[in-house]
Amino acid sequence: MILSSPSSSSFNLTKIQNSKSPIFPKRLSSSLCSFSCSSNFKNQSFHYKNQNPHQKRLKIKSFAIPGYDFSGFDGVQPVVEAAAVLTAIIVVHESGHFLAAYLQGIRVSKFAVGFGPILAKFNANNVEYSLRAFPLGGFVGFPDNDPDSDIPVDDVDLLKNRPIFDRVLVVSAGVIANIVFAYLIIFVQILSVGLPVQDNFPGVLVPEVRPLSAAFRAGLLPGDVILGVNGVELSKQGPSLVSEVVNIIKKNPKADVMLKIKRSNQDVDITVSPDQNSDGTGRIGVQLSPNVKFSNVRPKDLIEAFKYTGREFFGLTFNVLDSLKQTFFNFSQTASKVSGPVAIIAVGAEVAKSSSNGLYQFAAILNLNLAVINLLPLPALDGGSLALILVEAARGKKLPSEIEQGIMSSGIMLVTVLGLFLIVRDTLNLDFIKDLR
Image (cartoon, rainbow, N blue to C red; front, side, top):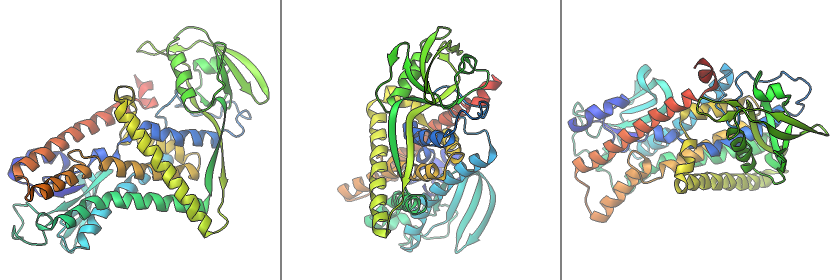
């Protein structure tokens, strides 16, 4: 996020962020992600955790829930690892802004990791570096409109007084940093563990079964593969099968659902009666994922490593763009899948407990999500700031400061409200929070 110190007209609003008036702000929205992007991590991690699923019936987590879940908080280390990945990605983003300004001689006043109260800080070269209480964001501050600054308002090294190209470079540098970081993560993954290759198989995998759940009582086991539901074969492959099974379960609370199960090399028929949620939908207490298996292909030489990296990078980028397109064009169906930092960390924690391979992809996709979302021409995002600069270039002069501040301040308010809503909603969806109700 790029911040400038405030004019009096916007100070009350921006106190929400513990910083000064934003000219190019970007905050909670930079950590938003379509949850459909994250499901790939979970699917991959489930496979690695269940290569020998029938050896121990009760080797299951205490917080598994049906279909997709936010159960990644049952363990401190995976949560810390996931939070560290998210924080590192945001730091890289803000470092892009900072370095683009610093290397051009543009005055920078603050570099913060996190939001909220300051936990620790130090000053170097007239820049305040701080660590703040909530490490799920960050910002770079500029002294452009700081009433307490003794820098002349016409100083050529203030960001607002620089040519359009200089400002475009500073605003876009965060996105560029995330794209480069995503590529480097994938390159390291290819060199260290290899290129992940996925093989799809019919049916839906049951990675985990919650103790005492309807599925547990019916005899469903971790590692079972659902091949049919109510006499209908699940012959095709892909992630859409998971949604189909979940929808059938949701629509049949307290009714018998016939499941055709493949267990080891045997077919087993199981009848399960879904428990009823408070909203009237059914649940059986399992996690579900596409029935896929993963292997790694290591490059023979450096040239092949770059080839694999490019293939994976463009593949993940396409998936991120496609997910974003689906979110916007089918918003009424996909709005519930948009998640904030709590859900992202929950998914990341699941990935961290399963394989380093999945954690690499988790980090790469988050980088690409952050880059793409921040390019959207919306107030409070980098794309919104770039749009204002392009308007200035077309007009031949800047917009009145009151209009620019009003646009960006409204964007901050919208993003703040949306971010708080997502945090509260995703926290309430955590399984151990549900159990307290």
